[in-house]
Image (cartoon, rainbow over all chains, first blue to last red; front, side):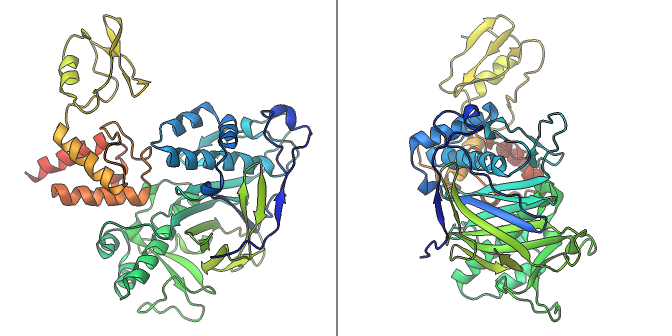
Length: 330
Length: 139
């Protein structure tokens, strides 16, 4: 498997101004610096590592009544747990970013934008300016992830590498993928590899989600058959023959058959192999106000975490392997 | 023993899946609240149309078939409670599951579901109604 080579930091409970706002047993959150405009932060939790009922109950305490309700409605312990961790992760993570004001994760409010994408509903307090934080969460029953950026929208999607597809992959692709993508999948002889490529493509594209979530639009707003996600090898773009999603150095582009101008250049995509078990797609809007930004790689920092308990920076380790898209881990 | 006048009583008796194991509480002659799985639905007023989606449209057999396909796709245990009111999201269906479920339903019922319609399916009941609507079109 892989080994975590990053630093493991354990936090002790310590008294500070946070303490009085929290339920007594939860340790205070250790602050983290905001990502710079060019950076993307990714935090993830492995539900299998969080088994303390006490801790899970403490997480429940920082959620809103609406969130709790939503969790109770899920069927089964596994689903409840990953849903709980998703909310706890997003609240704890946002609250940690250093801003002028200490934020109590429990007091965070969320709302949805007009397309249904969740965002923080900052409660304005006098002259306080809310941080221009953007976030997005995605989870499976075995991994919960939260991506964070500053100033630019972000969308992420995670999928289990081994998830089984009940239907025939090509029937699926014929229906939901573009013609080029179908051709790519059809050309793969080995069923295991075909399965892998399918999941990668799905994660980036239809579960994509990473793409439309970054746009802040819902699933229905981007008909998936009309755009192709593929890697553009740096030299030439050859429409007859293109690479599977395995080319680390190449850029992932989205080309719309409806409107070729519209989608392609504003976004950076990355596809990662995360924690050995998942594919993670990240999509971030390019910030064209920064010079030289257009073709710069996605600068990514990744932490494996247990909210309020410990963090481990895992960027650059075996836990995070860039599969496609131009990614620079730090 | 809810005494509710008008067409609403018909609907109540024909709803098999959803109203099993529920108890009716009558708070007044004109309204009934029915706790289902611990949740209270808004009251039924005898004069106006029911405010919650008590749908008489989908046949119980259709709903049952959808429940079975959903259970299979999500690998839920046989005895798990999946009813017409069950929301796909609450059952743990993500976007890929939903698409697979829709494809399974298409195969089972010989229909073709448009992308836009698929997006509006939130519960098992929604799926069953859509299926019957499409089957009717085919007929």
